[in-house]
Length: 437
Ligand SMILES: Cc1ncc(COP(=O)(O)O)c(C=O)c1O
Image (cartoon, rainbow, N blue to C red):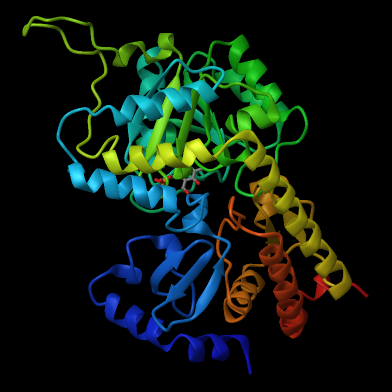
């Protein structure tokens, strides 16, 4: 039976839900990334590393809400802390003591940060970080890596040919350089140093890892010319106790975070030095006629107590040894997938660092947006469905969590072996050059 037919038969409830949902929601849900053909799975519940969909199918999760649930679903410590919070009221309309606790924990993990602000999402963390850099420098332009995603926000369009709806004037302020191209980054910063408010880089852009010296070169040239360097660590912060910046030994001026720091609840944050955060600082005063900060920034759901509570519980568990174990497990999966592809006679790129792993269906070396775009998307989609059919929630930014076991990792590798066999006629049809003789 074909991969797609098997998927449809296994997920009749999801197919029904998708059709019904699409009547009121364009694309069937509110996250464009959560549509995949023929229809996405509609989930019912999750526990630990497992997910159950509306048809009752159990799957081992290797997505964890796009990397955010580092302790899996409904971790008992998070559940218990949230229960305690619900007793007290979960949004009180005034600061709480929960917010400075998580703030201190996160600032303590970042070498170059004294202060932090919370937002409801990673998108808004980047938005605010960029506004802060513009306010601090008095300049407007932003340099970023081609193809890098920093959230659904106009100023950080992924490419110069951005999607519809982004004004040309906004795009004119964006300058692009290829990830992993130190020379291009250096040349761009030197050429535009008088106009640049910031350079923003995701240390591990999607599943690509930095070539030795790339992040260091970007750091050096930005420092030399007084351009703030922003690391978007919304995803990569899970690489180590101190994020990708500790993992690769490069300290930015501003760090954006999200995902894991909210323990599964909506969150984002940006952290920096006291000097750069100065526009946000409110002069202390007991008088009602006090002056406000230079840069106002508010949000009804910023630092939501649920996110602060869950995030703190997660951070307490996430101590250095836990990251080491996750990285070892990630390496085990990457090695396993490489071996499956080699033995299966198919060439593909297996990428990722730490707890991340990913297959890109190409015979090219993948190191930037262009080379990653050579990956065959049709094969990627069929592979995803084949893995779903075998009981795995294998989607997007695939990763292992802190509670994923060796056995679960090995079962994923075994399922990849079966899926690859099933996929081979399609490889022949869609990308014959990937078949090894
Ligand atoms: C690197 C990066 N930055 C920013 C974002 C946006 O974060 P959010 O989805 O919380 O708005 C994402 C989301 O996946 C991301 O991967």
